[in-house]
Structure formats: C-alpha cells, structure tokens
Length: 112
Image (cartoon, rainbow, N blue to C red; front, side, top):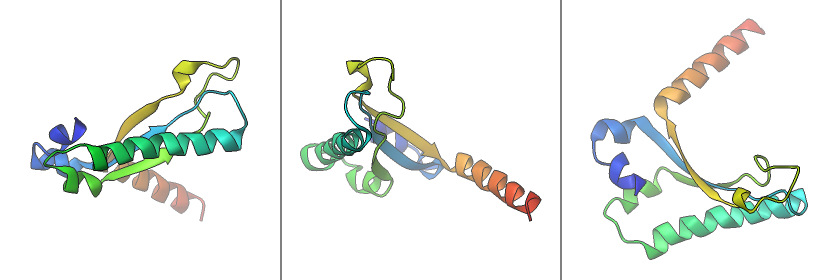
C-alpha cells in the first residue's frame, strides 16, 4: 500500500503533500452522469481504504488523501472502452507545488 512507503521515512512523508484517488469513466453516456459515476468510483475506494482496511498509518494518510472524479476527460472518445473505467492514485509532491507557485507568481508579475 502507498501509505507504507509514504510514511516509512520522515523526508518522504514531508515531501508527499497529497494522495489523490481519481475515478474515471469511459465515454459511454453523458458528461454529467460520467462525472457523478467517477466521483462515486473514487469515493468507493476511499471508503474501502478507511472503513474496511486496517493499517497503522490510516490517521496520517487521512490528512493527505482526496477523492476526485475525472469523468471521461481522459477516455477514448472514439469508442466505449471498458479499460477507461478505472481508479488511479496520484501523488502530489511539495516540490511540484513550489514550482507551480513560482510559475504562477512569475506569470502574475509579468501580467501586472
């Protein structure tokens, strides 16, 4: 499980700012239904992790985890592909946030 790695060392724990559970759908159906379905898919995984699993870093992980729906954003639009119906885990790192904040600040300064 990811939390075993994230919380294995203090420097890793400090660097990982967020664990995102992303629900995805295929292109079958309309946008609204697919977005709702993807949120439900991610929420189901979240509930499984926090209500059905037992692990020592659960409390710490709960401070970093977020469930999000992505709908059919990354789905194959040319056909209904069942492989697009999935859940992905993405890790966000503090260094990425610093890079993004720096980029945004430069952009804002440039456009004043």
